[in-house]
Amino acid sequence: MMRRDWPIGIVLLLLLAAMFVISLLAGRVWLPIGEVWDGLWSLDHGSKDANLAATIVTQLRLPRAVLALEVGGALGLAGAVLQGVTRNPLAEPGLLGVSAGAALGAVIAVYFGFAAHFTTAAPLLGLIGALIASFLTFALGRGGGTITLVLAGAAVSALAAAGIALALNFAPSPYAAYEIMTWLMGSLADRSWNHVFLVTPFILLGCAMLLFSARGVDALTLGEAQATSLGINIGRLYFLAIFGTALAIGASTAVTGVVGFIGLIAPHLVRPLLGHQPSRILMPAALTGALLLMTADVATRLIHVGPELKLGVLTSLIGTPFFFWLVVRLRKTAP
Image (cartoon, rainbow, N blue to C red; front, side, top):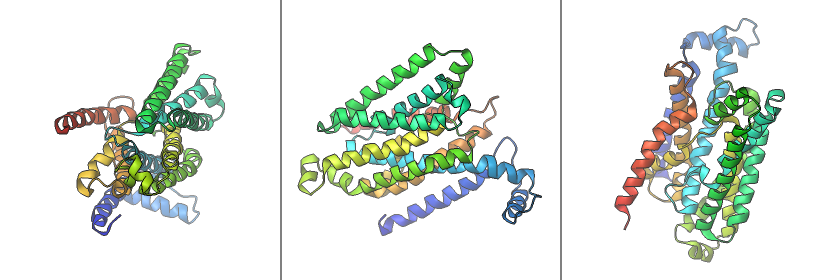
């Protein structure tokens, strides 16, 4: 980030740190911070006298908060890169079929019973589904420009959605159908350190690939021909954007289920503050995405409506009006 961007970055980091602490304490039962601190101090010194509050934080809420940080950051970063690559302000990670492919992979794990025997089956198959979907999108859209790439992503998403519908139609039992539908609504509840350790390497690698595309995305704002004249390899740029999104968002979706609109909203929130140069908004968009997802996750625990409100449902309820407003604004500003 440029020097004048640092104040915004620092504010976002402070807000994110505050929300991270709230995420550790918030729930249907709020935990006293003093009690949690004492318990964590006992754990650090190997004491067996750690209290229940510390156990809840370290085994339940801390992995949930870490996943919210990673997944939200990946969604925000991928959304910013894809909006730059496609030059489409309505672009988001689901545009390339990655989220749908990951969802289909996880649904296959549930449908055939793999998830019941291996806790990591759904995330692993979800990641494989995301990679296959991104490969298909890249293979279909290669050489045809951004419009062809978007159309290829839409076709892959439709194919994956058909596969999910087929699995629901032929679900072996009502319980299996319920489990599939519950997973598709997206949630960070009941996630453990195993899930964190499984997806973190893929998310970090995917985000690194997305960050390496920053210079190319800046040049692409001038058009493909001009970017090529500046020495940008367009094929390499698309590869970094697509497969970086596949790794980061595929791994995220494979663990959390489908969480929409974070990747769409985060770049638009920071763009008025930082301008329209794509590389300037990448890291702020990642921080904003993490902040949005963590805030939404805390909200699902504080809204008491019987069963816990699913994270994907809440982000859709918030994101859909924003999407409508964005479409109306773009229509008014269009030439």
